[in-house]
Length: 187
Image 1 (cartoon, rainbow, N blue to C red):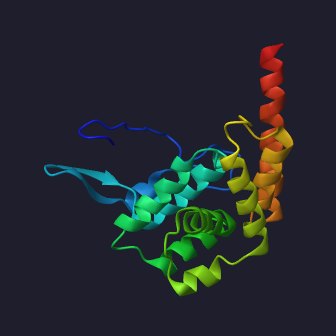
Image 2 (cartoon, rainbow, N blue to C red):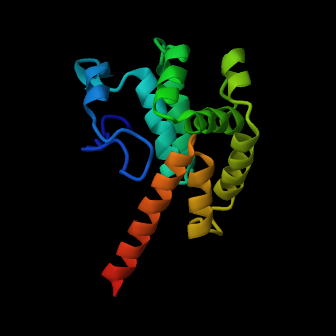
């Protein structure tokens, strides 16, 4: 949002079906809260916990190729006066998205210096997450030279961020089918 101009991004799904994330939007809508956009404008929006989870997924989905994905999480953390950290972790565990959340929080802390509670800082301390964060930060810094990650690097990133083997298999099948469909359409 800049001044009185802002963009609205409408979705019928939170993330595409290849990700280990529920397809339905209804549970998120049921947990929605009122968000004040302007002095006299209030809209229904995601709960603080759901917003941070979804923004972390958005970063992964887009390979953290823009600093915006990190700043979105930082901004949400700074405005989330009602954030329930244990509930956030519980939801990430239910969605099998702990690595995704850890990476989102890690990137926010490491890139922008956002202070996290000590117990959360300990919780995100994970070798896989640190390795991926290092790669994503290097990629983010070299965006002027490399426009996108290779297909293999994108798949590797996604596989490393899955909490379960089932999530990895689901993503591989989705990615392969999407890649084949893309090739078929181009033919």
